[in-house]
Length: 213
Image (cartoon, rainbow, N blue to C red; front, side, top):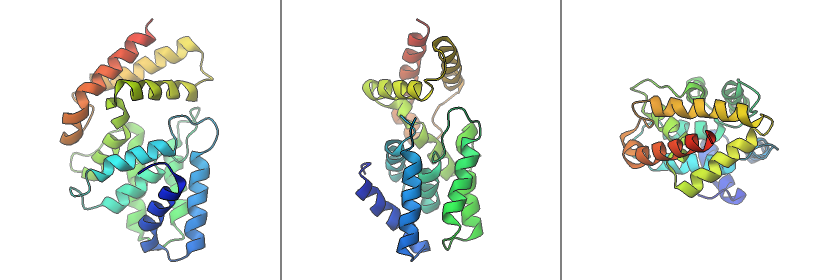
């Protein structure tokens, strides 16, 4: 899937129309969500990132029982993003509730979407939560991308934190990256661990070395 708005809206409609037969409501919800992702100051946390996460999730579609909730959580997990805030995940989860509540979702389903989004704050998940593990791995799959794509990603993260002076950014970014290297494995699912782990660690080490120059 591409970040083309027409394709995205078709996907949105297929995903949410089982819970809402009001076309105007679906359209308004889509436009409000897209508006957030297109807001100024975003360079990585954009619709392109959401498409990438959704594409990764699709590779697991035969392995989960909760694919719809997983797709919905992916759509909303970064909908609120302010690099100066430490409540983006909570705010994104609340935004999702606001958008989805007028539709015909069961309260437990809304709670599940809310909880999945909150997992992206600490990137920790219960070992039995297959859908949560997939969402977290998909969110971090960019770390295991090609060197060219990873370089663009790291530059985009720096642009989102453009208000932070260079030396402070470098120190903070290194600390974040080092937490990944300190893990026994970055990716929870065997599929992404096997396909992306080595590349992710290589990319991260290169960025840390660059930040130390």
